[in-house]
Length: 99
Image (cartoon, rainbow, N blue to C red; front, side, top):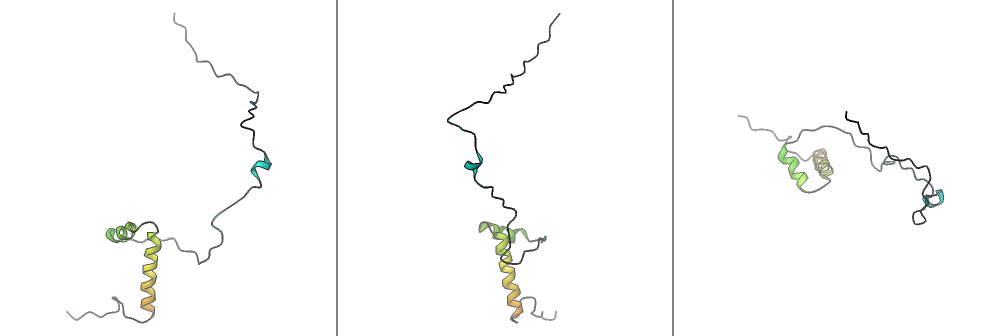
């Protein structure tokens, strides 16, 4: 007959170890709590989360210039809007020749 063996559970120690090289933190050591939630008030109007489908090569071009590609895309779109608002004809405003 074989006897089953069981692993011994680790001994629980309730005594705290007092290490002079590693003292427990106190409230004075930590200082006053600093709570930061969110980004705070925005300097500019908040942007709108949306989904836009772009050609892969266009997106790759902006991403290849480093981080901040979404802001650069936004800047190019803003320049195009401003250009159209100033009355200069853009590609969409040009008339096609009759076929």
